[in-house]
Length: 68
Image 1: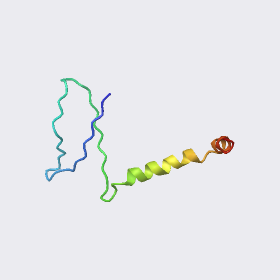
Image 2: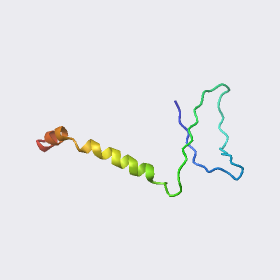
Image 3: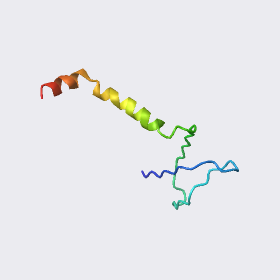
Image 4: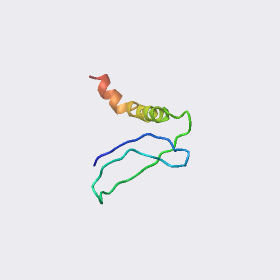
């Protein structure tokens, strides 16, 4: 599987225009549209940092590393 990411805005005609991507005829593709509110440029990084903190809050891991 290959992933291609484009970040763009909707134009004045309400369309999303992407650069040409050459694919073989019949190639299955999946398009996911994520709409962000203005000012949310870093919200994904913030959410990722929050979810990653739970990994470090682990009593078993603390016990193992405290004895290392």
